[in-house]
Length: 228
Image (cartoon, rainbow, N blue to C red; front, side, top):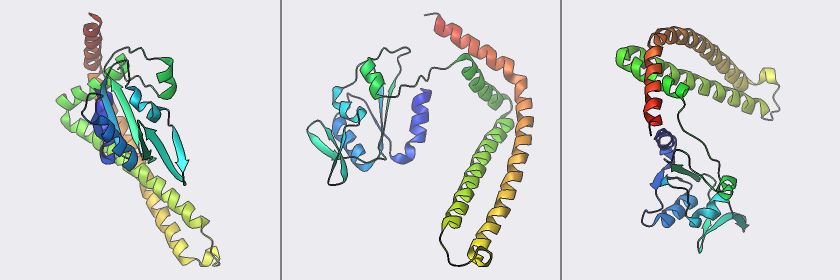
């Protein structure tokens, strides 16, 4: 279920539609998603896919009067490049045909012992030391925001420097102001990231006290799943 949860969270802003091949009118819903550039998740798949979606998987897109079109069934639909399609199965080891492998990117989301141990460590720490886990999550969010701001600053600088101007650089006051603001912001971001790195080391050291519990939980899980 982790793959499904991740996709739902990631594509929530894109108006994600969750369908199965048994959903009434799923073709019409798929057509609208392709046209308006929303995301679609098909869940509960087995090893056979409905052939109706073959043109989507094969990206049989043609241009008509400069507009990208895709034929689905007997309908021609305007193709929006923002459209995304994900298909998820709960089968542990599905056997798909070479044709499906050729049309799709297949990702194995099966959990590994190491991956499950890391996830259980988060759960154990959240139970035993909720304030520590909260701090770790806030640190991750803060780092992501700082790195995003850093990237936006770099893009802004490149954009400003690439603009053509008759004014010499030394006399271009708006550009000098942008450069000054960017420099002060980048220095602050660099300091914040440095502090965050040090805090992260301290948090991780405290979390290691619970590693053995998480490892034992992961081993038990794989013992249970292996019994079948």
